[in-house]
Amino acid sequence: MNLDSPQINWPNLSKEEKYQGLHVQWSGLIDPSVDAVANLSNASALLHSIFQWWWVGFYRVEGKKLILGPFQGPPACTSIELGKGVCGSAWAQSTTLLVPDVELFPGHIACSAESKSEIVIPIHTPTGEIWGVLDVDSEHLNHFDKTDQMELEKFCRSLEIIL
Ligand code: SME
Image 1 (cartoon, rainbow, N blue to C red):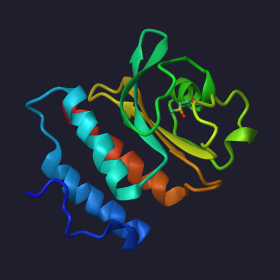
Image 2 (image 1 turned 30 degrees about the horizontal axis):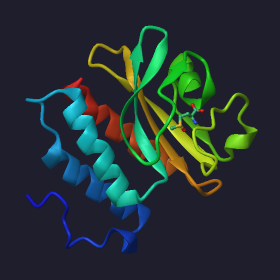
Image 3 (image 1 turned 90 degrees about the vertical axis):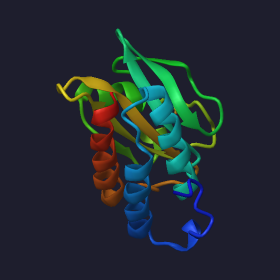
Image 4 (image 1 turned 120 degrees about the horizontal axis):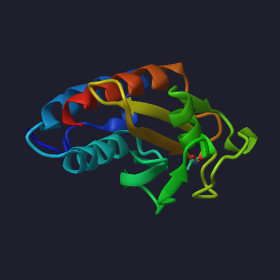
């Protein structure tokens, strides 16, 4: 398999086609024989190369905090408390949070002034505990919709086997 797939012109594809491509490529890339760091590094690189989001990456639960994991984009906050910001709230509520305008989200943590909208999806282990979250930021307002939510939740479910 050609991992960087130069033959695919991602920017020309519709959102639905990009997610189709994501699921196909990820099923070839995911490797249960290695650890979460290796797999999530590839996951963030694949998501970023397909969608060109401002920031995409993972935070993992360590005690009462979320700690920065593999990501693509500018440097980010290394630690977020339970219930704080969009990430900590998605973790505390165990639900996806879709934020069309980050300035209207009470307590939003601005790791980058460029970030205008955000979606955060909890990631569960096979036993149902929250392992961490997938966080995606856009430099555009109102960038994420229900299709992103549905497809990214599906993507996060596929991660269970490597956690
Ligand atoms: N904005 C997030 C913090 C993480 S960065 O966006 C990478 C939040 O409010 O939790």
